[in-house]
Length: 302
Image (cartoon, rainbow, N blue to C red; front, side, top):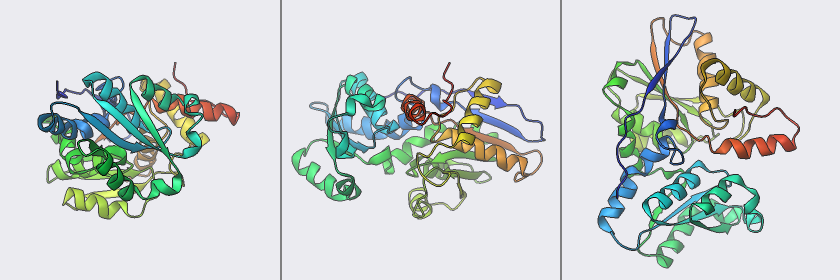
């Protein structure tokens, strides 16, 4: 059994300005293999299944609330693949059951190996160790970003997406925006909304995309994973108004910044904008647990 291609709906977000804004609902692609993760894993997994039809074993990296870890675990369960997550932070060794993302991943069959944050920084060395220990395993990098992942992102672009002037996506490890950049039409402008303060991302995206048709815009609020009260307010208001759930780390930050750009007349009148909802909704429960401990407003999920 392989990962199939799936058609995804595009929803218009009504605006008062002479700008047309649409959201491609990649979050609806799968309950647990959510959004861009589905397409980033598409070629990685299908090629591996072709080459190794027996004893399939997937290893990947991620933090405590990683959408990628959750997606790989869910994929492992659905396609009967053994999975191992290399998790950042050995302090989680004895309390991972308290983390909703890791708890769900384990329920989906994923085993864990916890490493110190210092060890985790050198993922090249960790990968070399894992390759020797598990020579037949498929080792996927953090966030799923590699050349196969970029190729898989082309399925997010369809005949329908060709009619838009701008294509927008949140940027974490750079694979999704690189794929959009690589496979977009020549007349389209690509905007990547950085949710991590990583100054190396531009060069990384350029290398993976091989094009210079994109711009990266800061949208991280100073730190990856930081959730401001303004971000929560925007997400809750957006859901109430448009009946669409956004996550607080990726698409929520992108849409908030995108609305600000629209209000600032960043886009010419008559512009048609398509933003990609890249999922990540599984992370809301973990975010709300942290917000509850801080006595702050929660993200609405009902």
